[in-house]
Amino acid sequence: MPPSRRRRWCATAAIVLVPVCSSCSGGPLSSGGTASPSATPTYILPAETARPGETVIRPSLAVDGLTRFWLIGFRDGMPSLLGSHAEWQAKGRFARARIVVQNTDRSNAKFEAKRQVLVASDGREFHVDNSAQEIKRQPDEIMVGSFVRMEFDLWFDVPKDARITKLRLYGEPPFGSVTPTKGVEFPVG
Image 1 (cartoon, one colour):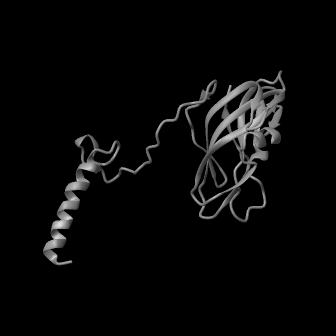
Image 2 (cartoon, rainbow, N blue to C red):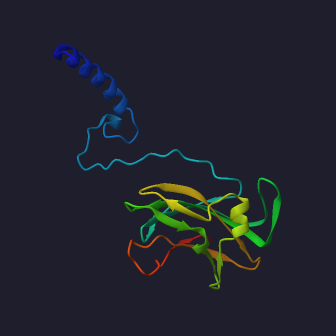
Image 3 (cartoon, rainbow, N blue to C red):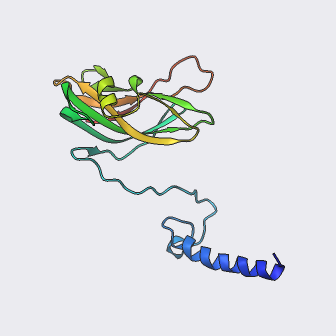
């Protein structure tokens, strides 16, 4: 490309890009300000409507091993669940936790739903219900790619008398570790 044409192209690109970038919310040029050398770029994700009856939990980040977790929604007290083919009755009652899982490592990390537990006020622990997970088409075990973030549900069938107070989540231990991670807890009730 001849130098004069290259200059015209660069000038046109600058005219188009500056207004677009300056109108981005939270961007370095938003609100007429100037770029800050210490500003860290962050993703701006759209808000999502919670499902009926779900308590929205303002997410707080917790890290266990190579895995970051956010608990973003919780619902308890469901007598049954509806799958793609039929309704399934709980032995006690169903509880559902909506979580975000992120792998923080440069290689794959395994997430195992069966390790995750709800904890009652009296200390009893309840593992994910395999039938409910399968009926609701949620992962039982999944490989989370390097720096990949996923959002899905964990389904539990807990006794009617249990007062659920927290969710304990377990991540992938660092490569070469021979001991499992200790888990992180989120209050739910």
